Image 1 (cartoon, rainbow, N blue to C red):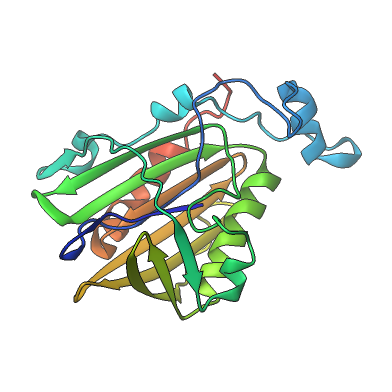
Image 2: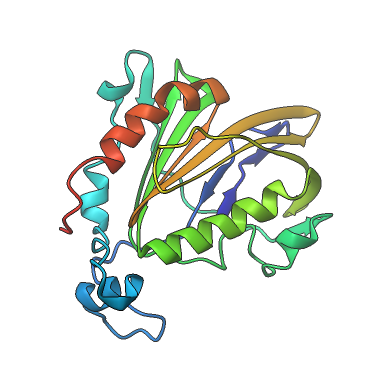
Length: 241
């Protein structure tokens, strides 16, 4: 998963978002680059003749499940997409996160090829944002990839990230998630300190079958809109488009 951090001379100017890098191809590709049929991929998830898992959705299908401003209420505005930054990132004081690889903190170790994402600002405030991300892949890949990063980050109460030439002091706290939201749930509270300024972000992820939802942003906004995102993103028909 990728940690994207916007830095200015006065410190962090936007919430940090955990994302999984992806392209918008609709085909299913295995690790060798060869195309695999949805049937064969799904059957691999259910050995022994059990019912196969639902085939992953395309990026276009995921896009249609995202929240829009009308779902959130008054005061919300969609934030224009921002180009990816490619600053060098180093992790200090979190061996579990460092062990995932040199660029694990920026998502280089994961690749979920079907994704859709959107970010909203609330009342025009740069610190009041909520972001929704949807991913689709085999249940095993989603579970392993998401759990690996969340466990590494929440396993380190404090650590540092050096992004370009800026040192960011990080604090993480694992949060409990009510059961019944999906097959698996993860949540964490992150505090970023840089340039004399602290930014607090909550992030909750829910996996339901071959779908993964991540809602990130100001803690109050995540709590307010998680159910809306879950109902719209995960509860629609799961037939692949």
